[in-house]
Image (cartoon, rainbow, N blue to C red; front, side):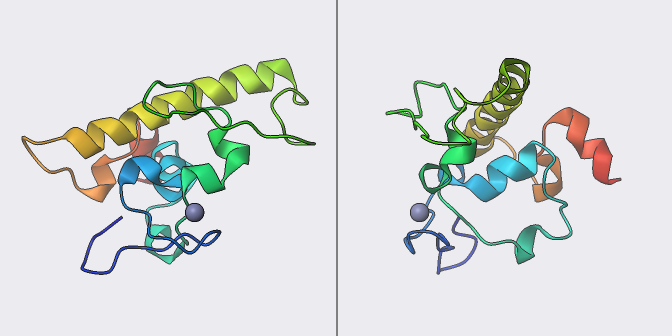
Length: 122
Ligand SMILES: [Zn+2]
């Protein structure tokens, strides 16, 4: 996420998180898991470096998909939880692409979240 010359670095691999569509931080933000007040204090991470979250992304633009093994693999979790989690995370991922491709009017960070979470912080 390059907001200035130096991009933000991933806390797992140390590489730059170049696009919002690679960002675990912004995905969690658009799905209402991070307060806008603490967004700038929270460390960046690639989606691919956060498999517990990104294993739920089923989208052609996220290729190849991430598979997580072990206790937090979606195959080990409650199917109802997996379904609702996947639905939310995929909507959030689509939202990141909409933000990235927005050309007409740059959005403010407060406009980034999915509609139902914009109100959550007000
Ligand atoms: Zn990384």
